[in-house]
Amino acid sequence: MIEVKNLVKNYGDKRALNNISFTVGEDEILGFLGPNGAGKSTTMNILTGYISMTSGEVKIGGIDILKDPIGAKRLIGYLPEQPPLYPEMTVTEYLDFVCELKGVKDRAEQVKAIAAKTGVGNVLERRIGNLSKGYRQRVGLAAALAGDPKVLILDEPTVGLDPGQIVEIRSLIRSLGKAHTVILSSHILSEISAVCDRVLIINDGKIAAEDTPENIKRSVFGSDLRILIRADGTDDEIRAVLDKLSEDLTYEKRKDTDEYELAFGNRESREISRKLFFAFANANLPILMQREEEITLEDVFMKITANSRNSEITSSAGKEGKIE
Ligand code: ADP
Ligand code: MG
Image 1 (tube, rainbow, N blue to C red):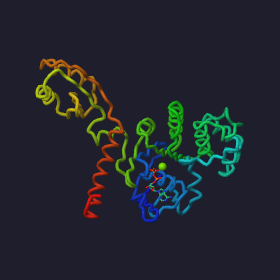
Image 2: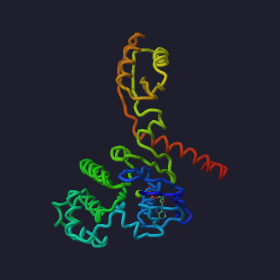
Image 3: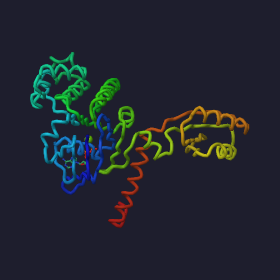
Image 4: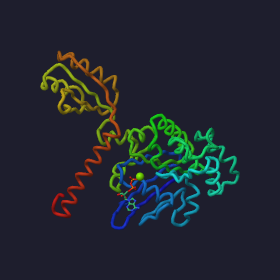
């Protein structure tokens, strides 16, 4: 549904996007993850035709956005980082206005439908300026849905919302993903893993990783689960037990603690627990604490961005001959 090839964007001397390529399938929710300044909004602004690209190719539903910008735009609903809401307008007036811009035929009907979908049906006659941030965000989302576009591009849709509102907006986005292609950006990692089928991690204008959250975790850490364990024994005794335990086990002692962090190649955690119990019991080392921990996208993210920070130091050292 969306094809992006070799996308480059320069702002003056600064290269904000450095050769980005990706595709998004129909009815897929793709998460754009990256630190502030990574290039998420720039990519979304190009996809939606708000700013121009320096070079590259973007197709929406097979339509090249340079060859037929209007045709491509018709397929897209966009919730920008700062939605252009008019505080003096009521919600109905605003949504009706957006429908008019998008050339929707039966506007009254459409306003009712998008308002119902986004849960703003009860505030239709309120002024936008008097709405809470959560409701304003819903109105922005409703505006993106006007004209029932196939593709939804949502830039940081939960920024500034409280935890309850975040949960609601997320479940709304998830349900929208069933009939739309959705690209969603966030710098909140748990949000991306909760909502998205596939994740694209952008760092410094480049794609650093792209896969399902599970696969990314596995490829970066070898597992998506780890177990913390503390046993009543010396380091040597504990290591001896762990070394014999399982081929696909990797472990390390957590800094400044007497806890060991274990990662297994697969996640048959009941099986792992049983193995650990008997292995330590046979060695006469009581397990004092055992806890399972999901590897989070945050762990992945820290690792990926740490690597690229290092390579950045190396490459700029190469260029400048020194590390600044
Ligand atoms: P993100 O949305 O991931 O936080 P952006 O796409 O907004 O990142 O920005 C990517 C980079 O491009 C940043 O370094 C930012 O400072 C720069 N940038 C964004 N917009 C402009 C602009 N209009 N002019 C100059 N630089 C910009
Ligand atoms: Mg942004």
